[in-house]
Image (cartoon, each protein chain N blue to C red):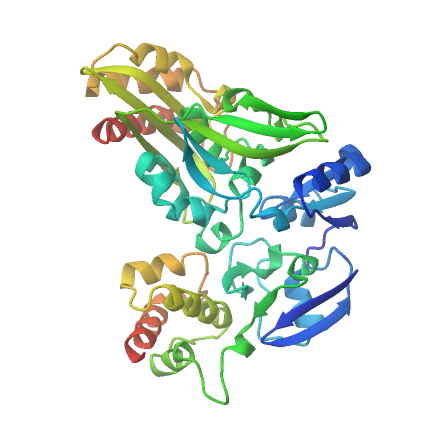
Amino acid sequence: MQVPATFEYERAESVPHALELLERYGPEARVVAGGHSLIPMMKLRLAQPEALIDINGLADELGGIAVEGDELAIGAMVRHTELLESATATDLFPIFRDAERVIADPIVRNRGTVGGSLCQGDPSEDLSAVFAALRATAVIQGPGGMRTVPVRRFHQGPYETAVEPNELLIQLRVPVAAGTGSAYEKVERRVGDWPVAAAGAVLRIEGGVIARAGIGLTAVGAAHFCAPEAEAYLEGRAPDEEAFAQAGRIAAEHCEPHADQRGPADYKRHLAAELTRRALARAAGRS
Amino acid sequence: MRITVSVNGQSYTRDVEPRLLLVHFLRDELDLTGTHWGCDTSNCGVCTVQLDGVPVKSCTVLAVMADGHEVTTVEGLERDGELDAVQKGFVECHGLQCGFCTPGMLLTARALLDRDPDPDEARIREAISGQLCRCTGYENIVRSIRWAAEAR
């Protein structure tokens, strides 16, 4: 039987209350929402927080998916199932539907949250690549007020994010622009598993050329989950198969995949190129 | 910590450690052993119960998180001595097999049919994809859920 080590448990009643609890318990406290990453790590004693601040009661305050001006706002407490089933989000960005359908399984998705996925900072996490491809912004609240951080600067290392111990991720904001197509391609060993490799693509095509490209990569050691060299290569080019294949090769060259039980490094690098190519082609078809 | 949880319509108040998992609360504190406990890693899905009507894996939910909420376990599916349609389906179509994954499958199937009364086979397979049948006999489970959909 796997049992977590002992910890103090507090239930936050509002965002200010959560921040007050974080201040009181200090850096050894952890915020728990869905808990589907954190609790298994606690059971394996890979994580031993001294206190858990439960924010499940803030599902209304930190929930909701809505277009606000030229941005799509997604609350940190939005559960994966809710994002998958949100026509507002998936009609604008089919990449969310592609990715959410392959994140864990339907029952885990009922509980896990979007914000929790990003804050866990797992180097193989799917939504980190999705939001990196989308060039989203993270809204973080702390004792001094609100601040924003581009998702591409959100991850600072494995399991390390820009969120300080006394802060809370409250929302993700995605820029919305006409003519944008998006897609996500993942290879996994079986349903519900972490990716062997995965790639997300977001393309804005104007006048027959690529005006803006976003490429997200996960599980392959891509810095900040993105592929800026391949994006730069694509911008200004015609959206054709040759350009997508070359962008895939460039993206793969800049990865640093590690060999593990999911496969050797060269296989993962191959996947990074191929999945990038496929995601770009599908994204172009949807723009 | 003192918690009050409504399980199958009955309210239970207990003092529990925050680290107690919901699956162990149900089995060890309330003696509701219909909820099985399998892989302990949120993979196999045998510990699935409904929390406020939504299927969750109870080995990854703390009992304290269920405080003030409603839990439905397999013991709560039957009404006034009458089996739920999904339970009948599992009997009719031999969906039980060894029975270990059955309680979780039943609760997922019930939640699926509550939202989508007429799911096709692909939808059923997707809904139970987070639950492992070690008999590898998904055919009869899928048939059982279809039977329940048609019996309504």
